[in-house]
Length: 209
Ligand SMILES: [Zn+2]
Image (cartoon, protein in one colour):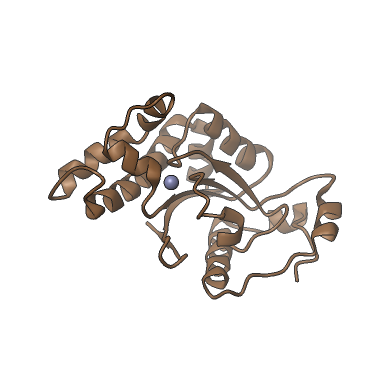
């Protein structure tokens, strides 16, 4: 049972590596049906005055990827930014800069997932309302995959989709470093790490890439 929220002192003692290990250990508990119970009212009380989260995770909106559960985290543990297709934009970059440079988080994780509907739609060049402009963010990953994977370059090709999910995480990490001087410098100084992972809908396991 979790009874204590992360304090400033606890956060200060964390390293990017220890946070990554903590999240992967949590994912192990998730896949083993061994999630930690939370004393919610106690954690709510302890976090009312402030928060000292260990990481910021950029995830898809997919309902099958419950981010806090996936890593067995609770109230006050992690910032979560979500957008269909888990790509960065100026608002998400600002949110990540806040998480790390202001609120002290040690890890930025870009989390893609198997069979992502947004990635599939980008692979198929779907055009619909605001979805069209949103998918523009994922198209570069699909273009890259078409140079790397044999066969049809659309969502009927499972290998093409899987490669695009992975490329989308990698390209998002690259663009975070390019577009955020703050995060890039923090990473260069060893204050944070920017990492990428893919969540398996089949097993619940997160594999780092
Ligand atoms: Zn998705």
